[in-house]
Amino acid sequence: MSFPVLILLVGAIFLGAYFVYGGFLSRRMDLSPTRRTPAAEINDGVDFTPTSRGFLLAQHFSAISAAGPIVGPIVAGLAFGWLPVLLWVVIGAVFFGAVHDFSSLVGSVRHGATSIVEIMHRYLGRKGHVAFLIFVWLSLMYVITAFADITSQSFTDPELGGGVASSSLMYLLTGLLMGVALYKWKLPLGKATAIFLPIVFLCVMGGRWLPVSAPALGPLEPKQVWNLFLMGYCFIASVIPVWLLLQPRGYLGGFFLYVTLALGLVGVILKPGGAEYPAFIGFTSEKGLPLFPVLFVTVACGACSGFHGIVCSGTTSKQIGNEKDCRAVGYGGMLLEGLVAVLALSTVMMLAKSDALAQGSPDRVFAEGLATLVQRLGISRDWARSFVLLAFTTFIYDTLDVATRLARQILQELLGLKGARGRYAATALSLVIPFLCVSMTVTDALGNRLPAWKAFWTLFGTSNQLLAALTLMAISLWLWRSKKPWWVTAAPMLFMLAVTVTSLWLMIRPALQGLTTGHAPRDPIGLVAVILLGLTLFLLAAASGALKGQRSGS
Image (cartoon, rainbow, N blue to C red; front, side):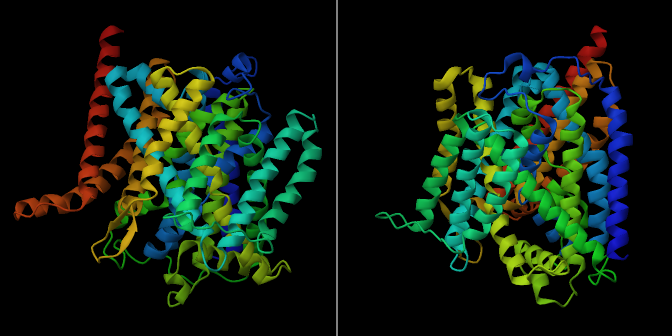
């Protein structure tokens, strides 16, 4: 398949899906511009702030994207070939991911903009609520820990670390200034965009000329110092009003992603010829991994992501000023992320199987591929490569602070913590585990020391997809009781459950085999997989009981 045909075909499918299937869902959900949203009702200026559709879409897109839709499709494409990944990204984004994001956003708005955890509480009772809370909150702890450690590692990279750190700091300051300009100085959004968006591009590139580094503080190495700084940043970003940092920073990040996406897609359209990388390698990768379920839990964010549901029901639903905006922000935002995944996959398709880069890290594959594509537009290849690598790490911030705010909001809902003191206490509690984990290391099977979170990395994709399945289950219960088309969420829920339960079983099986031979399992992944499977079965049983109770009471 030629690159121009590929991009135009995917673009046409996504555009048609937005108007046809997205319109169908909007009508079935009975979205109304006259129904007051929680953002309009509460409007506390901290978390609940009515926001225009374009502004919110950019912020939401930036929060859900980050590195997820880039890394997953590249890793899966290199392992199984580009065709199965492409099919799953397109089908998954339209019928799974976009449905998941849209329905969780609408469901949250209709339940007072509470998180998906509280929605689970309403339909599964206290026990189901607590079980799901443990799962979601621990998932967020992992996200904060992993992304903080990845960011601090990039800040200490010998080649680009100082530039990345400098770009990140300038990017955050730009977001703060834009927030003040919009809400205190009343600068119109159009003028603010024209002023601050070019500054973001200068910040990302200017870091190379103004590198910064963290000094060692006593026993703390520079990387650990950066980890402490990031924990402090997460605390501040979680408790200050959304208009001061989260909204403008996400808005600018969203526009940056728009520009990057547009340049890359134009480059793909202008690229002659077709794919060089094999379309299909086999149902088993060269490392012995089965296509089902590994491909689906690896692509993750590019097709369907449970983390999106937390964002939709956590920060985004509190900013919906008009119910009609849910389709553009929820359904449309996921389709945009699908385009990012297709663009990332195209950088794999350009490679020959024997290319040394095919054995490289996903960020390098993406940077080199995008640099080649953008070069056709007259942009320097070296400039483009450096720009992409710097931006890739810089915008991890978009996930870091959103995850911290979401964790804080979940604890506030659970513990009933109110006001400023409640925000500070819930944020501090949410950062205790990441604070401890960023300094912990473990020894792998080869005797290498590595960050503790990396030992559980194989669980991340599975737990993320499992979170999506459980979110769809909660939304299906709401739709069932509301006499709305529950099957639109129940069908993808069943598939995602099949994927994740199979994946968990593959992790548990080695531990069971060790027990049968009299060897105690040393790998903690199997134990965690057992816990996740147990929580899943418990929640499924609770959902079944809720359905039976509804039927008997009807």
